[in-house]
Image (cartoon, rainbow, N blue to C red; front, top):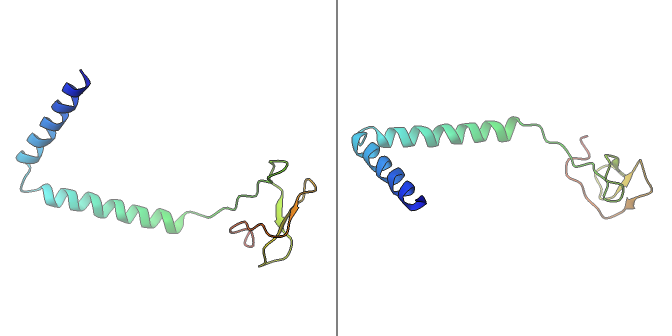
Length: 92
């Protein structure tokens, strides 16, 4: 039953493409350009957030030991790692 359904979907897509053959490149190009524009806007305007979850207590308590250097500690437990790096934690 499922292969028959896929065959009908493919047949419907082929008929739609044949009936819109003059407009199909413009439609596909417009969809691709719109998707690219939306992707760029979301990627640049979405705020970045660091993962502040502690690996030991699993709560949000990680802070940098020294700004712009590797190393984090947890304010909520005794976790400390001098080599761990958390992206965007300096800006938080």
